[in-house]
Structure formats: structure tokens, C-alpha cells
Image (tube, rainbow, N blue to C red; front, side, top):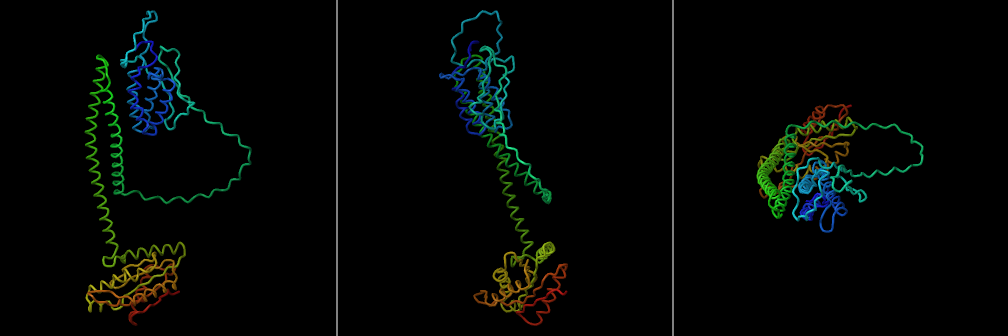
Length: 456
């Protein structure tokens, strides 16, 4: 390259076309692509040559993009590769003495010039954050005093924000006293298991992201190696540089392949861990469900029912709702077991759980209270509403049959006691009143419904 040349060889733009097209794949890369295209329209020639002043400016601009954490990884890698390609075409610093005679310029070579080791720092470039594209009026314009001297400082103008419109004077609004919002309840600290699961999820995301970025970087390495191998370079320093670059790219590709194998192994291991964790979580859920539910009927056990009763009493204390509670006892279930067998007695219990007591409202809680007893909790329900629901269930039971061993066996009736929660009454007192009333009611016969209201 002659010292008086102010433009690059046409081969530079030809070698950059592949990388420039690759910039359009990402959001930040597209912004950089548009900026480069606007500069090429002003500082590029029809024969493919580019003004050296723009090459110097573009080298600094790409450096900003390559090191900016705000850019996506693919755009940073592309910017770095294009910057390295431009390094070979940067104009060397002017070191010729002032008294040296002017020599005729030799014919421009088709091959790229040999990169000289710069004696001064490259141009200082100030660019805006690549979050939005510059408007057409803000195309970066390098400032050069003389064509034979490298540009010193290039500043990209930042468009000034529009002045806010002058609003008409308005009377100041009267400020009302702000009502402070209730402070949110502090969330409980994560358990050790939740921390482990969060760490595993984060690791899976990081490995997946690394594989994605590595795939894009691998494509860039492959295209860069192919471009270098196809470049026709003369022997000498540039040829040696080409061999060094190709060798370095080969080593990078081999190391990348080894990394891919390690990441794939780690990814498969994490998938296996995730599968085992889902299986263990399912088994734990089933175990927890079995520990809280009756195995025969699938209804909650007595302990679960009592805890829910205590919770409902707490709501009654806060909001003043009504709360009704009933205990149901299947009549003469023991005789069914003796006459038809224990399997038939179990079928009776399942029929009550699935066919009779399931007709209550969805927010009414039904539980297995004892051997042949069920308990029902009627939240926000007065005595008359609960009595109506129990009477409806009693009529359904008298017209229901179970099929066992080829026989249609009528479903036994049930007796029940209904009581109402009294404000300030302990849960144990409510349960005791229902149990004692049911025991006395069963002494008078079957198919009975008794109401035991609390004493004043």
C-alpha cells in the first residue's frame, strides 16, 4: 500500500460481506449493520474500495461493540472478527522525514496490504450504547485534517433531546393524604431443598445458554477459517500470518469440539438429575397424600379434618361467619360385614364417600372420622342450610344399591348429629358435644338426624 493511498483494496469489502450479513441475525448486530451500511454509502467507491479514514473509524467502533456488555454475545463475536480483519488494512503512522524526496507511487496491488505494527494508539471513538439505531442525520463522520495523517479523535454526535413544550400555567392540585398500603407479609425463607432445586435450574439454563452461544461462535470460526483458506495471498510476511491464523483457528475449533462433548455430557447428566427429581417429587407427593388421606375412601383423615376445623374457627373469629359441623354414622355396618363379608362393608364405605357425601358443595369438607363414621364441615352455613344438605343425602342413600358378587345390596341408612359453632368455644368442646350427642342418638334407633345446639 502506498503512503499516498486514501482507500483500501476492493478485496476488503468482498471478504467482509459474509460477516456483515451475519450481523443482521441479532438485534444489536442489525443496529451495527445499519451504521456500517450508511458509512459505506458515503465513504465507499463503486469499485469496492473504502476510504481509509472510514476504515480507521470503523475499527474503533467495532472495538466498542466487541467490549460492550450491553451487546448480545453473537454481535460481540462478529464485531471482534470484523475488527481483526480491518486491522490488516489500518494505515500505518506517518514516519517519513519531511526532507525525503517524493517517490512515484507504485501501482496498487490487488492483495491486501501488510499490517504494520502501529507506533501510536488507534483513533479514539465515542459511540452511543447500541440499544437503538442512530437516525440517518446522525451518521458518524470521521474528521481528518490531511489525507496522509491518521485521524486523531472521532466523535459520534448524540442527538439532543427535544425541548419539552411549554405548558400553560395551571393551579397546583390539592394533595390528599395518601393512605399507606398494608405492608406485605414477609415470605418464608427458602428451604434447603428449594435452594438446591433453584441451583439446578440455574445450572441447566447456563449450560443451555453456553451451548447456544458456542454454536454461533463455532459457525463464525468455521466461516473465518474457510475465508482465510480461500484468500490468495503472496508469499512473505502476509502468507506467514495467514498460516498462523489458520493454525490458531484450527486449534480453537478442536478445543471447541472438546468443550461441546463436555457440555453435552453435563447436559445429559442434568437431564437425568431433573428426571430423577421429578420422579422423587411425584413419589413424595403420593406419600404425603397417602399420609393425609384414608386409603380405603380417599377422604382426608381425622387429623387433617381437625386442623381444617381449627382454621375455619379462626376465620369465624375474624369475619363472624357461621360454621356448622356434622358427624355421620352408618347404621348397622357390622351386620353387613357379617352377612356379606368385609369386602361388602368396604364397598359400602366407598359408596358413601364417592356417591353420597360427594354431593355436598365443593368447599364443604368431608373426612373419614372413624371406623364407620364420617365428618362434614359446612363453612359459612347456618343450621337450616346444613340440615337441608343432610336430609338430601339421607334420601339419596335410601334409594342407592351396591353391586357386589353379582348381588344388588341396598345401601344401609345413616344417623347424624348436627351442631353449630359458638363464638369463643374451643374446638375440643365442639367435637365432644357432637360425639356425645351421636352416642345417645344411636341408642334410640337407626336413620335418625339430631341437632345439638350449644347451650347459652
